[in-house]
Image 1 (tube, rainbow, N blue to C red):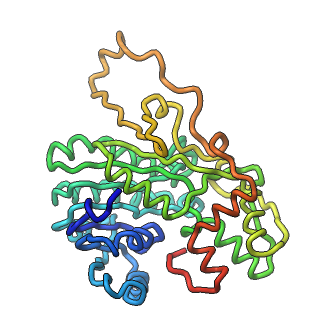
Image 2: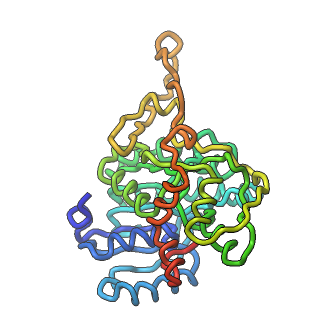
Image 3: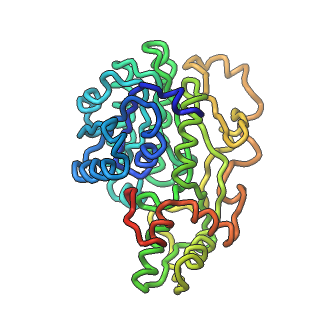
Length: 354
Protein backbone atom coordinates (compact mmCIF):
# COMPACT_ATOMS: atom_id res chain seq x y z
CA UNK A 1 0.00 0.00 0.00
CA UNK A 2 1.27 3.46 -0.88
CA UNK A 3 0.72 5.48 2.30
CA UNK A 4 1.57 8.74 0.55
CA UNK A 5 -1.22 8.28 -2.00
CA UNK A 6 -3.92 6.94 0.30
CA UNK A 7 -3.34 9.29 3.24
CA UNK A 8 -2.11 12.44 1.52
CA UNK A 9 -3.39 15.47 3.50
CA UNK A 10 -5.83 13.24 5.43
CA UNK A 11 -6.54 13.17 9.16
CA UNK A 12 -6.17 9.86 11.02
CA UNK A 13 -7.30 9.11 14.59
CA UNK A 14 -5.55 6.43 16.66
CA UNK A 15 -7.60 5.30 19.66
CA UNK A 16 -5.45 3.65 22.29
CA UNK A 17 -3.00 6.10 20.82
CA UNK A 18 -0.09 5.69 23.25
CA UNK A 19 0.06 1.90 22.91
CA UNK A 20 2.67 -0.09 21.04
CA UNK A 21 0.54 -0.53 17.89
CA UNK A 22 -0.14 3.19 17.54
CA UNK A 23 3.50 4.06 18.21
CA UNK A 24 4.46 1.79 15.31
CA UNK A 25 1.84 3.45 13.09
CA UNK A 26 3.54 6.78 13.83
CA UNK A 27 6.90 5.34 12.74
CA UNK A 28 5.44 4.32 9.37
CA UNK A 29 3.09 7.25 8.77
CA UNK A 30 4.79 10.39 10.07
CA UNK A 31 7.39 10.63 7.26
CA UNK A 32 4.57 10.29 4.69
CA UNK A 33 2.38 13.02 3.24
CA UNK A 34 -0.38 12.45 5.81
CA UNK A 35 -1.88 15.70 7.04
CA UNK A 36 -2.57 15.06 10.73
CA UNK A 37 -2.56 12.19 13.23
CA UNK A 38 -4.66 12.50 16.38
CA UNK A 39 -3.61 10.51 19.44
CA UNK A 40 -6.66 9.66 21.55
CA UNK A 41 -6.12 8.07 24.97
CA UNK A 42 -6.83 8.61 28.64
CA UNK A 43 -3.30 8.69 30.12
CA UNK A 44 -1.80 12.18 30.07
CA UNK A 45 1.56 10.94 31.40
CA UNK A 46 2.00 8.55 28.47
CA UNK A 47 0.87 11.25 26.05
CA UNK A 48 3.46 13.66 27.44
CA UNK A 49 6.18 11.03 27.16
CA UNK A 50 5.18 10.28 23.56
CA UNK A 51 5.08 13.98 22.70
CA UNK A 52 8.66 14.48 23.90
CA UNK A 53 9.80 11.29 22.18
CA UNK A 54 8.39 12.47 18.85
CA UNK A 55 10.04 15.89 19.21
CA UNK A 56 13.40 14.15 19.61
CA UNK A 57 13.05 11.35 17.03
CA UNK A 58 10.87 13.10 14.41
CA UNK A 59 11.51 16.85 14.83
CA UNK A 60 10.44 17.60 11.24
CA UNK A 61 7.12 15.79 11.59
CA UNK A 62 6.15 16.08 15.26
CA UNK A 63 3.79 18.99 14.57
CA UNK A 64 1.57 16.64 12.55
CA UNK A 65 0.58 14.88 15.79
CA UNK A 66 -2.21 16.30 17.97
CA UNK A 67 -3.06 14.89 21.40
CA UNK A 68 -6.58 14.40 22.76
CA UNK A 69 -7.34 13.25 26.30
CA UNK A 70 -10.44 11.05 26.39
CA UNK A 71 -11.82 7.57 26.80
CA UNK A 72 -13.77 5.39 24.36
CA UNK A 73 -16.14 4.71 27.27
CA UNK A 74 -17.20 8.36 27.12
CA UNK A 75 -18.94 9.07 23.81
CA UNK A 76 -18.70 12.84 24.26
CA UNK A 77 -14.91 12.71 24.35
CA UNK A 78 -14.96 10.44 21.27
CA UNK A 79 -17.17 12.95 19.45
CA UNK A 80 -14.62 15.70 20.22
CA UNK A 81 -11.79 13.87 18.49
CA UNK A 82 -13.83 12.80 15.42
CA UNK A 83 -14.53 16.27 14.06
CA UNK A 84 -13.02 16.66 10.56
CA UNK A 85 -11.50 13.15 10.61
CA UNK A 86 -11.09 10.99 7.50
CA UNK A 87 -9.95 7.65 8.95
CA UNK A 88 -9.68 5.80 12.28
CA UNK A 89 -7.52 2.92 13.48
CA UNK A 90 -9.17 1.83 16.72
CA UNK A 91 -6.80 -0.02 19.05
CA UNK A 92 -8.26 0.99 22.42
CA UNK A 93 -8.86 -2.12 24.52
CA UNK A 94 -8.48 -3.86 27.82
CA UNK A 95 -6.42 -6.81 26.63
CA UNK A 96 -4.67 -8.53 29.52
CA UNK A 97 -6.44 -11.84 30.10
CA UNK A 98 -6.08 -12.13 33.91
CA UNK A 99 -7.16 -8.51 34.48
CA UNK A 100 -10.29 -9.00 32.41
CA UNK A 101 -11.06 -12.24 34.27
CA UNK A 102 -11.10 -10.43 37.60
CA UNK A 103 -12.77 -7.24 36.30
CA UNK A 104 -15.04 -8.39 33.45
CA UNK A 105 -17.33 -5.35 33.59
CA UNK A 106 -14.35 -3.07 32.97
CA UNK A 107 -13.64 -5.12 29.82
CA UNK A 108 -17.31 -4.73 28.82
CA UNK A 109 -17.11 -0.95 29.16
CA UNK A 110 -14.02 -0.59 26.99
CA UNK A 111 -14.17 -3.48 24.52
CA UNK A 112 -17.94 -3.51 23.87
CA UNK A 113 -19.45 -0.14 24.80
CA UNK A 114 -16.28 1.65 23.71
CA UNK A 115 -16.44 0.01 20.28
CA UNK A 116 -20.04 1.10 19.83
CA UNK A 117 -19.19 4.65 20.93
CA UNK A 118 -16.43 4.90 18.33
CA UNK A 119 -18.84 3.69 15.63
CA UNK A 120 -21.59 6.09 16.66
CA UNK A 121 -19.30 9.12 16.81
CA UNK A 122 -17.67 8.23 13.49
CA UNK A 123 -21.01 7.87 11.71
CA UNK A 124 -22.09 11.27 13.04
CA UNK A 125 -18.82 12.82 11.80
CA UNK A 126 -19.03 11.00 8.43
CA UNK A 127 -15.64 9.36 8.89
CA UNK A 128 -14.79 7.46 5.70
CA UNK A 129 -13.11 4.30 7.04
CA UNK A 130 -12.51 2.66 10.42
CA UNK A 131 -10.37 -0.39 11.09
CA UNK A 132 -10.95 -2.03 14.48
CA UNK A 133 -8.24 -4.21 15.99
CA UNK A 134 -9.33 -7.52 17.46
CA UNK A 135 -7.62 -10.63 18.77
CA UNK A 136 -7.40 -14.37 18.20
CA UNK A 137 -8.97 -14.75 21.64
CA UNK A 138 -12.28 -13.62 20.08
CA UNK A 139 -12.50 -16.91 18.15
CA UNK A 140 -14.13 -19.59 20.34
CA UNK A 141 -13.61 -17.34 23.38
CA UNK A 142 -13.20 -18.90 26.82
CA UNK A 143 -12.12 -15.81 28.77
CA UNK A 144 -13.66 -12.40 29.46
CA UNK A 145 -11.18 -10.57 27.26
CA UNK A 146 -11.96 -12.81 24.27
CA UNK A 147 -15.70 -12.69 24.91
CA UNK A 148 -15.78 -8.90 25.00
CA UNK A 149 -13.61 -8.60 21.91
CA UNK A 150 -15.85 -11.13 20.12
CA UNK A 151 -18.87 -8.99 20.92
CA UNK A 152 -16.96 -5.95 19.70
CA UNK A 153 -16.49 -7.74 16.36
CA UNK A 154 -20.19 -8.58 16.28
CA UNK A 155 -21.09 -4.92 16.84
CA UNK A 156 -18.89 -3.88 13.91
CA UNK A 157 -20.47 -6.51 11.64
CA UNK A 158 -24.01 -5.70 12.77
CA UNK A 159 -23.65 -1.94 12.23
CA UNK A 160 -21.50 -2.01 9.10
CA UNK A 161 -24.21 -1.91 6.44
CA UNK A 162 -26.27 0.79 8.15
CA UNK A 163 -23.13 2.88 8.75
CA UNK A 164 -22.27 2.71 5.06
CA UNK A 165 -25.81 3.59 3.98
CA UNK A 166 -26.16 6.48 6.46
CA UNK A 167 -22.79 8.20 6.10
CA UNK A 168 -20.62 6.24 3.66
CA UNK A 169 -18.54 4.97 6.61
CA UNK A 170 -16.80 1.62 5.98
CA UNK A 171 -16.36 -0.44 9.16
CA UNK A 172 -14.07 -3.46 9.23
CA UNK A 173 -12.02 -5.55 11.66
CA UNK A 174 -8.62 -7.16 11.82
CA UNK A 175 -7.90 -10.12 14.04
CA UNK A 176 -4.40 -11.21 14.93
CA UNK A 177 -2.45 -13.25 17.46
CA UNK A 178 0.16 -12.22 20.01
CA UNK A 179 2.16 -9.19 18.99
CA UNK A 180 5.68 -9.78 20.21
CA UNK A 181 6.95 -7.31 22.82
CA UNK A 182 3.67 -5.41 23.11
CA UNK A 183 2.25 -4.57 26.53
CA UNK A 184 1.37 -7.69 28.50
CA UNK A 185 3.28 -10.09 26.24
CA UNK A 186 5.80 -12.63 27.51
CA UNK A 187 9.06 -11.74 25.74
CA UNK A 188 9.70 -8.57 27.83
CA UNK A 189 8.89 -10.65 30.92
CA UNK A 190 11.39 -13.34 29.91
CA UNK A 191 14.09 -10.72 29.26
CA UNK A 192 13.47 -9.03 32.60
CA UNK A 193 13.69 -12.39 34.40
CA UNK A 194 17.01 -13.15 32.69
CA UNK A 195 18.42 -9.71 33.55
CA UNK A 196 17.43 -10.26 37.20
CA UNK A 197 19.02 -13.75 37.17
CA UNK A 198 15.63 -15.34 37.81
CA UNK A 199 14.20 -18.47 36.15
CA UNK A 200 12.08 -17.98 33.03
CA UNK A 201 8.54 -18.91 34.02
CA UNK A 202 6.31 -20.61 31.45
CA UNK A 203 2.78 -21.87 31.91
CA UNK A 204 2.68 -25.01 29.72
CA UNK A 205 5.61 -25.97 27.44
CA UNK A 206 3.25 -27.47 24.83
CA UNK A 207 1.06 -24.37 24.62
CA UNK A 208 1.30 -22.71 21.19
CA UNK A 209 0.91 -19.05 20.28
CA UNK A 210 0.95 -17.06 17.03
CA UNK A 211 3.98 -14.78 16.66
CA UNK A 212 3.66 -11.43 14.92
CA UNK A 213 5.77 -8.30 15.11
CA UNK A 214 4.39 -4.78 15.29
CA UNK A 215 5.30 -3.94 11.70
CA UNK A 216 3.22 -6.93 10.53
CA UNK A 217 0.31 -5.72 12.66
CA UNK A 218 0.43 -2.34 10.92
CA UNK A 219 0.68 -4.05 7.51
CA UNK A 220 -2.45 -6.09 8.31
CA UNK A 221 -4.37 -2.96 9.29
CA UNK A 222 -3.29 -1.03 6.19
CA UNK A 223 -4.21 -4.04 4.00
CA UNK A 224 -7.66 -4.10 5.58
CA UNK A 225 -7.97 -0.35 5.14
CA UNK A 226 -7.21 -0.67 1.43
CA UNK A 227 -9.37 -3.72 0.64
CA UNK A 228 -12.28 -3.62 3.10
CA UNK A 229 -15.94 -3.72 2.26
CA UNK A 230 -18.49 -3.03 5.02
CA UNK A 231 -18.28 -5.63 7.79
CA UNK A 232 -15.23 -7.53 6.52
CA UNK A 233 -12.84 -9.25 8.92
CA UNK A 234 -9.18 -9.67 7.90
CA UNK A 235 -6.70 -12.20 9.25
CA UNK A 236 -3.02 -12.52 8.45
CA UNK A 237 -1.50 -15.96 7.97
CA UNK A 238 0.94 -16.15 10.87
CA UNK A 239 3.78 -18.23 12.25
CA UNK A 240 3.51 -19.87 15.66
CA UNK A 241 5.68 -21.65 18.20
CA UNK A 242 5.37 -23.52 21.44
CA UNK A 243 5.91 -21.51 24.61
CA UNK A 244 8.85 -23.80 25.36
CA UNK A 245 10.59 -22.96 22.05
CA UNK A 246 9.81 -19.27 22.54
CA UNK A 247 11.52 -19.32 25.94
CA UNK A 248 14.51 -21.22 24.49
CA UNK A 249 14.76 -18.64 21.71
CA UNK A 250 14.94 -15.79 24.22
CA UNK A 251 17.54 -17.78 26.17
CA UNK A 252 19.64 -18.23 23.04
CA UNK A 253 19.65 -14.49 22.33
CA UNK A 254 20.30 -13.26 25.87
CA UNK A 255 21.51 -15.80 28.39
CA UNK A 256 21.08 -19.37 29.53
CA UNK A 257 18.90 -19.64 32.62
CA UNK A 258 16.54 -22.08 34.22
CA UNK A 259 13.05 -22.58 32.82
CA UNK A 260 10.35 -23.16 35.43
CA UNK A 261 6.84 -24.43 34.60
CA UNK A 262 4.24 -22.68 36.74
CA UNK A 263 0.92 -23.87 35.22
CA UNK A 264 -1.71 -22.00 33.22
CA UNK A 265 -3.16 -18.68 34.32
CA UNK A 266 -6.82 -17.65 34.53
CA UNK A 267 -8.57 -18.02 31.17
CA UNK A 268 -5.64 -19.32 29.10
CA UNK A 269 -6.01 -21.70 26.15
CA UNK A 270 -3.67 -24.49 25.05
CA UNK A 271 -3.66 -23.00 21.54
CA UNK A 272 -5.16 -19.97 19.85
CA UNK A 273 -7.63 -19.86 16.97
CA UNK A 274 -7.45 -17.09 14.39
CA UNK A 275 -10.30 -18.36 12.20
CA UNK A 276 -13.11 -20.69 13.25
CA UNK A 277 -14.40 -23.61 11.19
CA UNK A 278 -17.62 -21.68 10.56
CA UNK A 279 -15.73 -18.59 9.36
CA UNK A 280 -13.47 -20.63 7.12
CA UNK A 281 -16.47 -21.56 4.93
CA UNK A 282 -16.98 -17.94 3.89
CA UNK A 283 -13.31 -16.90 3.87
CA UNK A 284 -11.45 -15.76 0.76
CA UNK A 285 -7.73 -16.52 0.50
CA UNK A 286 -5.94 -13.30 -0.51
CA UNK A 287 -2.37 -14.59 -0.42
CA UNK A 288 -0.90 -13.56 2.93
CA UNK A 289 -4.35 -12.75 4.30
CA UNK A 290 -7.86 -14.13 4.65
CA UNK A 291 -10.94 -11.98 4.13
CA UNK A 292 -14.04 -13.16 6.02
CA UNK A 293 -17.24 -11.65 4.74
CA UNK A 294 -20.03 -10.85 7.20
CA UNK A 295 -23.06 -13.10 7.49
CA UNK A 296 -25.53 -11.29 5.27
CA UNK A 297 -28.71 -13.01 6.43
CA UNK A 298 -31.56 -10.85 7.70
CA UNK A 299 -33.82 -11.39 10.69
CA UNK A 300 -36.28 -13.17 8.38
CA UNK A 301 -35.34 -16.73 9.29
CA UNK A 302 -38.60 -18.30 8.05
CA UNK A 303 -37.09 -19.38 4.75
CA UNK A 304 -34.36 -21.34 6.54
CA UNK A 305 -36.93 -23.83 7.78
CA UNK A 306 -37.31 -25.02 4.22
CA UNK A 307 -34.15 -23.73 2.57
CA UNK A 308 -30.56 -23.44 3.72
CA UNK A 309 -26.97 -24.59 3.28
CA UNK A 310 -25.91 -28.16 3.92
CA UNK A 311 -22.37 -27.21 5.00
CA UNK A 312 -22.15 -25.27 8.27
CA UNK A 313 -18.46 -25.56 9.06
CA UNK A 314 -15.13 -26.38 7.41
CA UNK A 315 -12.99 -29.39 8.32
CA UNK A 316 -10.81 -27.48 10.77
CA UNK A 317 -10.21 -24.05 12.22
CA UNK A 318 -7.02 -22.07 11.55
CA UNK A 319 -5.04 -22.29 14.79
CA UNK A 320 -1.58 -21.91 16.32
CA UNK A 321 -1.43 -25.73 16.38
CA UNK A 322 -1.88 -26.19 12.59
CA UNK A 323 -0.20 -23.10 11.12
CA UNK A 324 3.50 -22.91 10.20
CA UNK A 325 5.38 -23.98 13.36
CA UNK A 326 8.76 -22.35 14.00
CA UNK A 327 11.60 -24.26 15.65
CA UNK A 328 13.98 -22.54 18.10
CA UNK A 329 16.19 -21.12 15.32
CA UNK A 330 13.09 -19.82 13.53
CA UNK A 331 11.88 -18.25 16.77
CA UNK A 332 15.23 -16.49 17.19
CA UNK A 333 15.02 -15.04 13.68
CA UNK A 334 11.44 -13.89 14.33
CA UNK A 335 12.24 -12.31 17.69
CA UNK A 336 15.16 -10.43 16.15
CA UNK A 337 12.74 -8.55 13.86
CA UNK A 338 11.42 -6.59 16.88
CA UNK A 339 12.75 -3.16 17.83
CA UNK A 340 12.33 -4.01 21.51
CA UNK A 341 14.83 -6.88 21.41
CA UNK A 342 17.31 -4.89 19.30
CA UNK A 343 17.10 -2.02 21.80
CA UNK A 344 17.64 -4.42 24.72
CA UNK A 345 20.73 -5.92 23.08
CA UNK A 346 22.16 -2.46 22.36
CA UNK A 347 21.24 -1.05 25.77
CA UNK A 348 19.07 1.67 24.25
CA UNK A 349 15.85 3.02 25.82
CA UNK A 350 12.66 1.58 24.41
CA UNK A 351 10.63 3.56 21.91
CA UNK A 352 7.34 1.70 22.51
CA UNK A 353 5.14 1.15 25.50
CA UNK A 354 5.42 -2.28 27.12
